[in-house]
Length: 346
Image 1 (cartoon, rainbow, N blue to C red):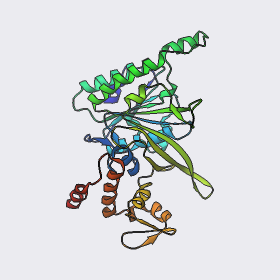
Image 2 (cartoon, rainbow, N blue to C red):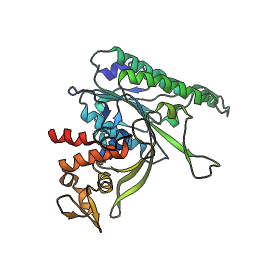
Image 3 (cartoon, rainbow, N blue to C red):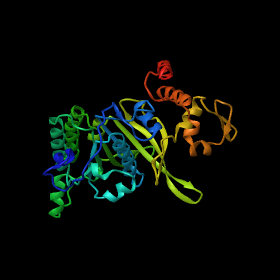
Image 4 (cartoon, one colour):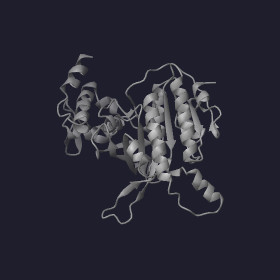
């Protein structure tokens, strides 16, 4: 049995899948599959989700939270050929076929369906303890999709009895759960991606969205990304979504920064989408009427750049964009000349 199988051995409602591949080393962060998303999360185009913290993706229903997380999961498995993912599915909405259709190696994903907060906590802690005790363990990621659908055992018992009572202990239970998990994840060097719902705050002076589940996730998460979306069309066909990401909370980059990335139904997260806006803001590529002027003097339409980004985002431009990303998203990064110097020496 593989290491994922060992971790979930004896757990109820676990769908164990096989793994395979080669070895890979840890890094300080996990590539999301999108340069601009990496930048807003870590301050670097080549960064991403911290590899031992909790990162939350919150939004209203149908904003693409699960699809977004699956994109990050796919990139993680592609870059860590012997890595594995523990996927806690509280909605029974994710299937092997759904993952396979998105190009995910399902042999290295274990799907677990916890029925309650307590069950999720117990399973996650046991897996992390076993993972920590092991030697030379391959990289691992955990996903909780979604937090908002988890009930407490008391809530389940009351429902079974036909009692319509509000569980006043749920928020405290979630705080304790994430407090324990934060320490375990940091020690194990394992990231946890959490999706969650938001709701409208009644009586707010201006329209305000609040994350469900109380303060537990808000305090424990290193980064909280608020997601909204609009349809991405090719003519009259809807081919994906443009996801607007606002950093509701960040311990590594400036809060309240907003970026847009594209999530294609066919190919997942677009690697380069969003870089053109950053390049224009910092004068790397200049907007001239309806076209963009490149450093070599060529003028092209933005659609052409987005369709063939590798052709236009050259190594030289990427170095400048990395410098711009640090200035835009990192605290105290007014001048980062050493980035250009180091890259020019490679």
